[in-house]
Length: 48
Image 1 (cartoon, rainbow, N blue to C red):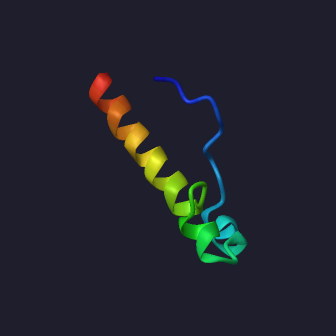
Image 2: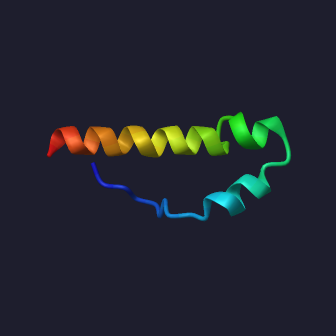
């Protein structure tokens, strides 16, 4: 499993970008992206 996009970001800047609940919790919102990255890291660790 190899990440294809850069997931490094400025957390505080991303939080400031959230102007609506959808920005934070929507399909491509900040929380969704964070959960996705955390799960990928867990799975990557289990594979290796």
